[in-house]
Length: 301
Length: 114
Image (cartoon, rainbow over all chains, first blue to last red; front, side, top):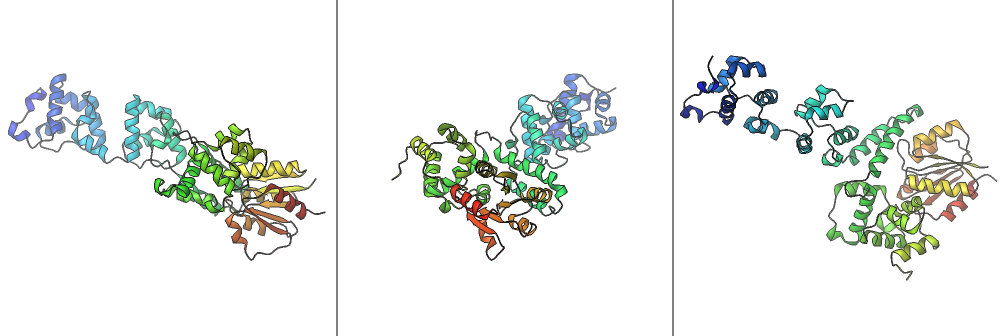
């Protein structure tokens, strides 16, 4: 039986070949593998392997074939130009996921085992880019946990607008009180999204307040952000805030404090401070106002 | 003890309302959205409903349309109160956020049956 290296075509002919052909020939030679053995390991016919090596057919472009060739020869599939091209068309989040798995030394098989509630076939399809990256925040949270990263690694996981749309869609059906359980589940998920600590250590509400104050007092330093602009609708307009509350919020943001931190510092009831910060309650003269003013070096003047 | 339904989707504000009204001697039942409030209303009678306007699933004004005509309603909301312009109903009162809790208690006392 012919050895792989003996199937080389002339140097002139190789110029037109994919660089992957030379790589394949080199790997076959180094491993002392014959074309038939490569065919057996990859499921390709020996004739097809031969034609690939002779450049009579284009080098395979299918992700599965490229991966099986790489596996059969113990090569990094990224060495194949065709595989790199395939990766370039992967959805952004799929690329980020595969890069994260590689960085953490988590094999794709191990990742799949960590996400047991989804079928292996579907997960493989996602990892190969055969289907769009999931948009369901809950699925993304599972993926992130399995890949030991934050769900915010994935651009799809900024679902404020999506949540709002889902809630609105659910609202359209909310005529039967029997469905309340379903709605409550959706609403609970949305609330958890708002309260989830982000990589910065702040909640979405903290970031929103900081944005609102920034837009009010230093717009030149606070560029418009579509996500926050949309969320601003949940709060009263800045000019409707009580003057005392505006002062407290400005100083709070200036000092990099969160509402929770402020509540903890003044020993006040956290819900009250959140309600004040969200423009629901007035800050009246009294012990809480005095503590806040003292802590933030504000005066009544 | 007067029984009050309180519905608001801001859970911090809802917690404050619940605490203040309970401290004033009322039995408070809370809902975080209009659909949940509707379920509570179908299960028991209330003496007063304190409602936000913009709530998920069923809004405050939609909810009011399904409440018994005899039930007084106190709307506590921000700019969404403007949506209620022109709506008349016996026992309907409005408070605009940000609110003063003393004003809230005074309005509640005024609306509850003697």
